[in-house]
Image 1 (cartoon, rainbow, N blue to C red):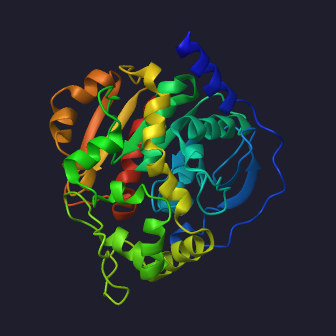
Image 2 (image 1 turned 120 degrees about the horizontal axis):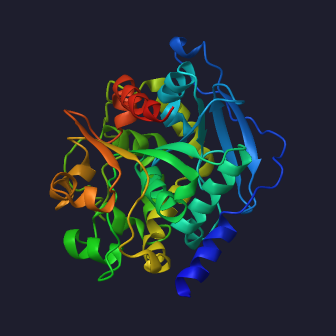
Amino acid sequence: MIRTCLHELCDTFCSCLLPPSSPRLAPSPPMASDESSVTITHRTVELHTGVHLHVAEAGPASVAPTVLLLHGFPELWYTWRHQMLALASAGYRAVAPDLRGYGGSDAPPSSEQYTALHIVGDLVALVDSLGEKQVFVVAHDWGAVMAWHLCMLRPDKVRALVALSVAFTPRSPARRPVDGLKALFGDEYYICRIQEPGAIESEFARLGTEQVLRKFFAYRTPGPLFMPKGGWGSPDDEVPLPSWITEEDIKYYTSQFDKTGFTGGLNYYRALNKTWELTSPWTGDHIKVPTKFIVGDLDLTYHTAGIQDFIHKGGLKKFVPLLDDVVVMKDVGHFINEEKPEEVSAHILSFIQKFN
């Protein structure tokens, strides 16, 4: 009965869509010359969940299969600019929203409005608005976390999944996730530091938006990320950008986060324990969607205690029985779809074309 009630609650979040509102165009981002043959359009969709999402789209919208691209933190729809080109060029409709709390989308004020049930509700409503019964889903970082939940709660909406960086991990009934991370890594582990509303925002304000983004994008240490309470470096520190992101790219990201701040994205971390509480009825459930998983060998998520054994020694396959392939990309960090755009696009296409 509890499970049924929560399923009905999820269906309330995941219900149909109100008519789309008038388009609110996002500022034009920098576009590479080889993207000029593909037009990326922007509009705002009013969801029945009460949230407006900014959506970027490319490719034919009539009969083409739709690929929904879900970004992570601290990212935007823009993280998928390379894949949107590749997918549209291959005849797919690429749809990349700013998730709630990001960019041109609404940012509800309470962290409890960022649970997996809320985000899955947005995604189902968005799929319905596109006139689709099912879509392919490609997702990175927090987008992958939400994609796993989408597959668990509403597998009927997902034709196949390509998850980047964050593997599915089954819910542990023994301990709330933030409590477990604090016991393992301590209070200065980045997810633990984020929990107190306003504290990490103040630290980010001290550093400046662009410096914060540079530090995240440049991070390639294959291990835990810590943000000391004494300060996460100096605003005067020189943080060179990696070769895969340009000064123009970082300026676009900075312009968007300067407008919105980081709180919306940080609230996903703050809702971790609430999501754990609400998803209790799904403890032990499996992901019954065809899946491909891709990760870089230098990704900090790939060096979480026990995760490599879980991925490679049968644990992931047990809980994702339709897992088709696991790809570990050598000398690649966390922001895999930006660092190796051509290779990641090829992996995505080779998988989803199996379902044509």
